[in-house]
Image 1 (cartoon, rainbow, N blue to C red):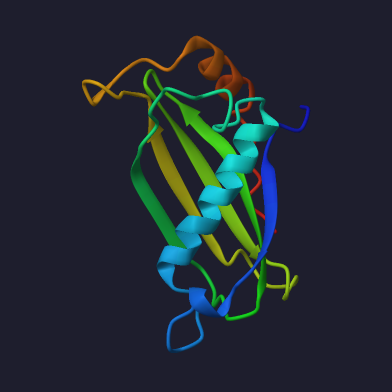
Image 2: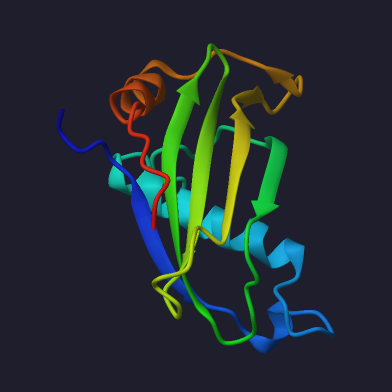
Length: 146
């Protein structure tokens, strides 16, 4: 089976992204996940900045499980991939690996559910067909290793 689209970004944990124990603050991981998600959307030809203007795509569910410590100044490789496509939403799965400690296990993993929404009514709408096709073509790759 050919490799399915995914996007990996490398990001260094900045001082402003840690708490008093020098561990990553949970909100920072959600920002890193979003950066990887935007890179994934670019890689499938659907960048939010140009292809999806005039439409709303709120995140309606976020989750993240931390599997090992992520510390100030660690470098993370955060990978995003399409994990599911519904009628009006899609799910992006994430894996964060600690590039500073390559022999360590997955440091964090999470999911984000994104819904197509009519901005006027603020109600879910079917995914635009071009977006739906791009998401489905990018879906079934599952490799949760670092």
